[in-house]
Image (cartoon, rainbow, N blue to C red):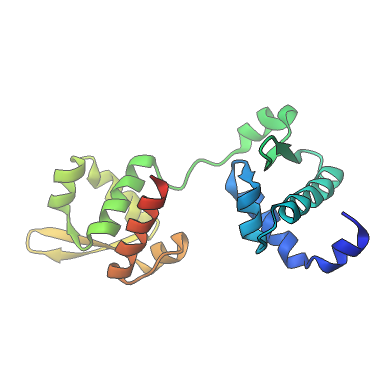
Length: 179
């Protein structure tokens, strides 16, 4: 990309594409890069990704941006550093099972612990403790059992609505797009 083209390209666009490459954890298609960059031109999107690759590959020692056929672009760790990084990788905030329980709570809230046990088994009690510890759910007494619902912290962390009806629509839309 020429110096004149770089000046026209706002740093904000480069930063958004760089953030998308970093956060995705997978190769992004040129169409996805174009969407993030706010352009309809796939050629321009590929040029932006190549510019980021040039900058990252020229300044970073262990991280690289790679172009795959398609074209697709990925920000990744260089192969020779994966063993070192693996020793320091953090474990996930929540187990997969706890996330599944959280999704039931988010979708069916307020939901009783008895209903959760019917849907998820008695291991749900361990998940509930884990979810309360991180502040994603709250409960209130309902007769002999408790009713669980998501908290504001849950909404902020996952970028979802705090309104249960809107949250349910958001979850339904995400499920449909993932299929």
